[in-house]
Length: 311
Image (tube, rainbow, N blue to C red):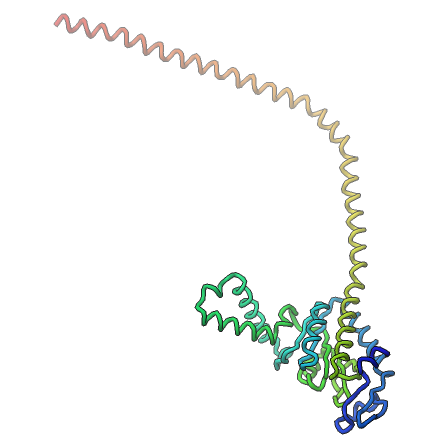
């Protein structure tokens, strides 16, 4: 509660701009400014953080939404630290209810990023490369935070639900739970987890975003050690069984090979003897053939010469 007081979470809007639905969360008024009762804010914040941690424990995605100037930079930093998707520039109509079209834009953005990395832009003319670069930057501003989301989020964390009313209404249509910071001038309808507090002060926004990011990180770390220990135990048991089985079977295999070794050795020794005998027969035939040809030549040659002399 002291941190909330230092951050100015208890300061609301001017009394003339108040929303009557926020009356249960208002402590009083001072200098025509409503003061928010932090006794309601602290338990509401703790309940929301516990729900966020449980979602992160189940590896669910929480979309950070804050497009106003005071929240844009802070929300992006904390969402990236927690590894969660975010929208911090402008909420495009149908970003949730018409996600199929948004998916096509995400695909186009990834294609442009690949072309920029593989050097395709350098092979284009200067004008074409400039047009594609501007298109990529525009897509990066609007949907760069959700390009790795991979589908609809499981929950929304919203700064200033009055400013992000379109996002809240789309989430309500799809029955996606909304966790929102609600000021005295905002309507809490449609917000599943209301966090009454100042949504304009930068220090207050930092407090909310940092707490939600920490809850996401803690929720993910909660399930990691349990899964890692079970995997190591199973692998050790399997390896012990696999290593023990071959050691017991080796003596039996050795005796079997020794019994079969004698016939195999006899058969292998007999084969080279048969192969060695065959070359001798071939050598005799080849030697006899040239001898006959040589005799025939010697006998015929003198006969022809005698016939010539007689004639």
